[in-house]
Amino acid sequence: MKRMILALSVIAVLVCGSLLSLFLLKNRSAEIIEYTDRIFELYENGEHDKALNEASELLEYWDKASLSLNVLVDTDRISAINSSVYRIGPLIETGCDELTAEIESIKANAKWLYECEVPVWYNVF
Amino acid sequence: MIVIMLRAFLLYFLVIFSVRLMGKRQIAELQPSELVITILVSNIATLPLEDVTIPLTVGIVPMLSLVCLDVIMSYVTLKIPKVRKLVCGSPKIIIKDGEIDQKALADLRFSLADLYEGLRSQGTFSVQEVQLAIVETTGKISVFEKFEARNPTNADLNLQGSSLAPPEVIISDGKVIDAALNSLKIGMGFVEKILKEEKLDVKGVFLMTMNKNAEYYIVRKEKK
Image 1 (cartoon, each protein chain N blue to C red):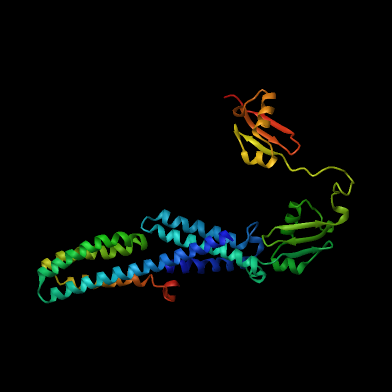
Image 2: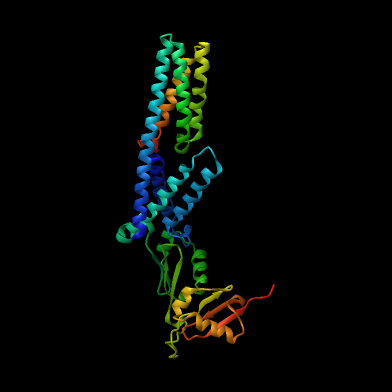
């Protein structure tokens, strides 16, 4: 019976941990999407300096967030966002038209980061 | 992580189903659920070990999920016989009164060679000598021989004697095993007295065993 209680406790801890990680992923990806939306808006309004500032804030946030994300998801999925986040600043500085694509790529990858952890049938199978 | 957990649970039932489908002869010794756990855990453990891009949690979560699920399943099978029958199967009689049940043998996909191999491993070489042979849920064959083929027991021969527990190891490689002393209800003083008679100390003993009648056996440590 002790073993049974222990097993049920472990399952409970795992479920709680899983839900917590899901919440964390949702938060992180929402935050990243918000950053990228703000950067794009500022860039479109011609406020390049503010956009650059926001991009460096995103970079700072990402550096911290990626550490905890590394524990929860595959490195491949994190590095996909990583490379795009690092490219935003230089793209704003040069006024390159690839910025829009890069921002969309970050948003899609951040969304995917959370969405593929949601317990829905198409993720399970 | 919850997706990984759900996947692990799904895989557990899927592999149990596969093992049950394969039949008893594929199992050999392990219960189906134990075999499933062995297969899955060994595979899951290697994933984060081989690939450093996979977080350790990806290995830990399914492994713990499966082991806990197995504990829960074993409890459920203990309480609900129908579930036990479903997961572990049930023993099948293949020989009765020296006659082979060919239908049961075909159901189990046991060939005559498999049957004879199982009988031989139980020390029986003739089907006619078998009163009852059962294929257990682990795939092992249990044999109950006919009266004329059975070895006589002490009771059959009317031999008198007492049932004595086997001797226990009380010193192993120079170390006293307290649990054995407690089990035999003797003190360290008694052991030391014996060792003194044998002109030995505890460290000089490689093995010392004793039974309830205080009959002991000592192996001295070899000098290096």
